[in-house]
Length: 262
DNA sequence: AACGACCCCAACCGCCGTTAA
DNA sequence: GTTAACGGCGGTTGGGGTCGT
Image (tube, rainbow, N blue to C red; front, side):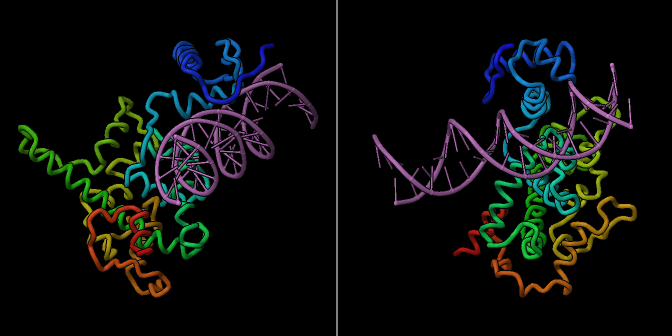
C-alpha cells in the first residue's frame, strides 16, 4: 500500500475528493479514500471536506452577529465547538475553535485573566457584547438606508430582515426544513431579533428587553446585559474604559483594549 | 535586507461513542 | 457479549505569513 500523505492538500487532491463526493456522496470516508485513490486517511478526507471543500463553507472574518453568537453560546455550552458551529451557518467547528483560541483567549491574556474567570465574563457582558450589539444595529441601519434608497422599493415592503446581508446570503435555503443555524439566525430567534434592527442600542444599554417566555436563551446574555446595567454587578471591579464617551468604530475588543492601554 | 517574535489557521492526534459483524 | 472499524469531537501543533527591530 502506498504511503499515506500528510500535510497540506494539493489542488489535485481537492479536485479528486470533491468529484468523488459529488458522485457518491459524503460518508464512508475510509472507503472513499481508497476508491478515490487518495493517499490520505479517511479522517483526513472527512476533515478536508467538512472544513474546506463542502459547499456553503464560509471563510473570512466573523461578522459582529457571529461573534456575538459565539460569545453567547460559549457562555451556555463551553467548548462545544461543533454544537456552537451548528448555529453559525457555513462556519465549521474548527473555525469557531480557532476564533476562540486566537481572539478571545488572546484578549483574556491581555487582561491578565482566564477566559473562564468572572472578571473576563464581566468584561464581555459589560463591554464586548453591548458593542457588538451596537455594531449589529449600525450595520442593520446602514442596510436599511441602502434598501430605502435602492431603485423602486415596494411601498409596502416588509421590515428589513435584521440579519446582515452576508448572513442572509448563506442562510438562504431551498429546503422548507430550517436547520438549527437557519432558525437561530432568523428574525424568529430571540437572540437575533433582539440584536437586530428592531432593538435599539438604548434598549440594550438599559436592559429593557426581557426574556421571552420559552426563550431558549432565557436568562442568558440578554439577562446578563440587563444585569450589567444595574446594581447587582459591581462596576467598580471593572477597569475604566472611558465608556462614557461614544467613539466611532469602538467596536471590537481590540478597540476596547486600546482604550485601556492609553 | 535580515532576523526573530508573534499570529493565525489548516491539519493532525487521541479519545470516545456508535454500529455492524 | 465482544471486538474492530468508523465517525465525530475537542485539544494541540506545525508552518506560513506578518510585523517590528
